Length: 86
Length: 252
Image (cartoon, rainbow over all chains, first blue to last red; front, side):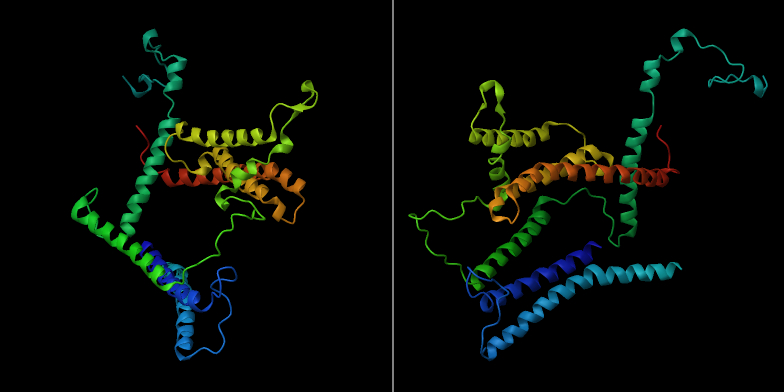
């Protein structure tokens, strides 16, 4: 249980860290307005487009990874125990 | 001597009368009750049992040592943890754009004067003027100014919190075992929240009078709900506890 928690937590932390880096580069026009979730800048270059993909991928990875280790795997284990017992 | 003639000490049968100096007094009988020792036993026995279950479930190798030496084990571990945080700081400071805010203008008073959010409760306590009583004996005068009243409210609250470490209520307890004190804690947390809201009531779309009343009403409601819930939970909780340890060795 503790192992699953720290795995999910590490994925969440590292994923959000990288997401926050890109979001602070591209989605924070000013610290007096919307931060981290402002709309993307227009006409991104090739590298910017790649950065958007990485940013979204890291956010998805963080959320799905944490959900996997905190919800899906423990639930699967419970279900397996339950069906093994019956 | 047959079985029927055995001397029984529980009062049944053709017993004997104990000598006066062996008969326990009512005070001694009270002191010999097993309630507290039984509760203590169950408490620690449950902790031991949970520990045992966790160890049996665990895939780790069981160890017999109480701890690890400071060098090298703890030191290396602490260095690793420290490196993670230092690395995170360096990463953030290197990659994220710095916030260079506008310079402060000392000639202009800000529109909203507020402390940091975690001090709102104290700021709210300064606004308790409406409950500063004006005394008829003084001809409707107040015995102290509203400002002093607010400062004294801070003193009272901080003093109450400062006393807590000196109240010896034993080791850590579960809220279901102490519903009243748990309810007091819930009410205190709620009061901290409502006084924080009171501090910014001019920013809220609520009538300030209602906010002021709710400041004192909501903590009472929250404490009552917490008390009722915990008191209700206690029966089932103690039932589980007793069922769990029914077969275990009773205390000596």
